Length: 275
Ligand SMILES: [Zn+2]
Image 1: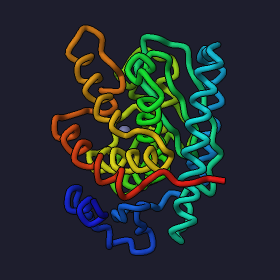
Image 2 (image 1 turned 180 degrees about the vertical axis):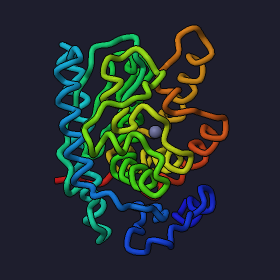
Image 3 (image 1 turned 45 degrees about the vertical axis):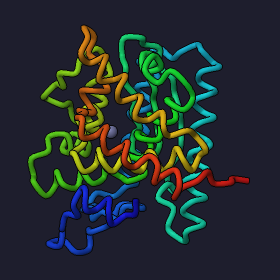
Image 4 (image 1 turned 135 degrees about the horizontal axis):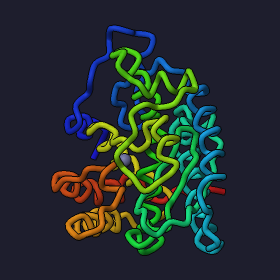
């Protein structure tokens, strides 16, 4: 799998009408529109992250939290090393990485805010099951941040002039429309960054692809990734509604693509040695 094949799959959108704002996503080189400054969005995210830490119950499972931090550290080092070695700008230069484990067995979700603020809900651990599964989910979420999908989304909102979320971000106002994904009292906070809304299909696909790459570079077994989605699909058919599915609408096509990419990514992005 090379980037051309990836672009053939997701398509390479054009945003030529604002030339200076046109950027490309790392590795895939998909064209992106970015007119909102990353620093502004990261600062906003960091402030919201602090509020969430105060509002939500943090897990007392220190071993699990340490495992999350260990996986995260390996990923952040591998990502930086990869971009350094391939002579590309490291997209995580301005990140201030942080990891939390929120105690809530009912919520099967995880997210990564712009700037590298990552949260896992304890309910998600029932789906990830093992270290490779956890790495798969973290890789996917980290990929959204590394590819600056929130910056892209916020920028698109400015262009379309329809984004209530964006007005909220810069005015600090209250969001009028409440996200229906219930279960969290932090929902309003998360909505401000659009974290509880699904990213678009291209972004999701890109996060799947880059997530596989980051997990593989970090030395995790990415064959577990497709199993996560299968476990998620099964859960979704039952009584409980896993939030990860509502923010990550899955399809057979998605599982099929991940399966197709797995061998190629394993070969092309072997574990990177970080000193
Ligand atoms: Zn996603």
